[in-house]
Length: 261
Image 1 (spheres, rainbow, N blue to C red):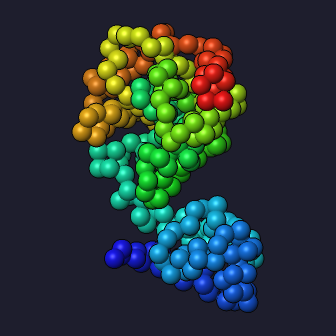
Image 2 (image 1 turned 60 degrees about the horizontal axis):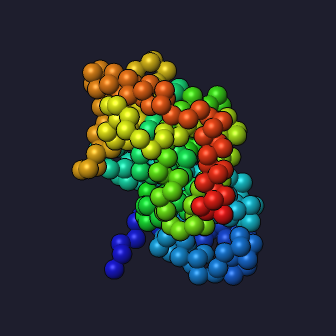
């Protein structure tokens, strides 16, 4: 039997308290929030954790201001540190405060650019999914960091979750490229010197850098100056070989129309 987390129980108890104070039964609240009654039952019992968007809708339905969304944020803070793999745990922290984020991905769409449906196929776990989507909040930060991402061309063709998921994902990449929030480039399918795998570099306001390299056994986070220098050099080489932003956008549209339409 799955153990109910006390954080989920506390959140569920607050939902139940506010619902009763509003004079609503579970079915009426479910109707207002556009979910099933059984889902409300599960939330109140602490057997599941709703998405942040659902917490916002619950607040609106219960006229509770920001009570539940604040409780949701506190819940996530209390558990999210346990949800990143140990080798990855320090990189997202650096990423969240970075003034510049650069990444190269050779197999999958980078986490910062994944749609929920694409990420769900890869992660399966709701807590890990929420953490990944929460990382994407830096795309909307004011001022936003400089984000430069290079993706191997094969990623556009590698099916994850089926044609509909891929179509939505590539449309999202195309849209992000148009907004200018991300400088997105595609690396053509060919050998590029010094490129042996995916990696990320976060540059903080003090200009210190943290890099993360994906490896067969999980990955490695580093602040070693020599390793950081190698990652920077490799990224420059990749940029020189990759398509420019406009041509990248055209290629994404071409693959969408020919492969995933």
